[in-house]
Length: 193
Image (cartoon, rainbow, N blue to C red; front, side, top):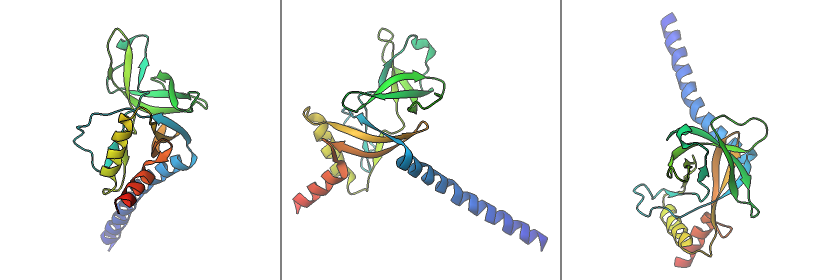
């Protein structure tokens, strides 16, 4: 009888742990969306041959390189902290990059060093943790096409709206000329009818 209680208790604890982990992940992302500071990251064209597209829009950002004093101090795939500022138009700009987590009330995002551009420029290329905007499966191809068309038109402004809190980031939306990609997809679907 004692063994059955022990097994039942262990089972309940394992079940609760399995529920806790995804619930905590969801709660953390929702907390960032609710309380994080919003930044607009201008997007840039991407390689059109992304083999994984379909359920998300692959994003790349204009503000993804930073000049460093000594490129030998930085390693590929190393975790870094990108301290942010905004330009006159409200778009995110890199203020500085650090290997140490910033203290105080500085806005920053935890990222990785992707690679060095070259030793002459002494620039590191930054890989942000928010390079995919997931959408419903049937919307993603239409959104990807609209996004690519907007990127090829220099008159259009494309950007991702990112919420940042304590170094963690979540994509809130992707916008083309201030219009949500979801709204653009909805309008394209309605125009086909």
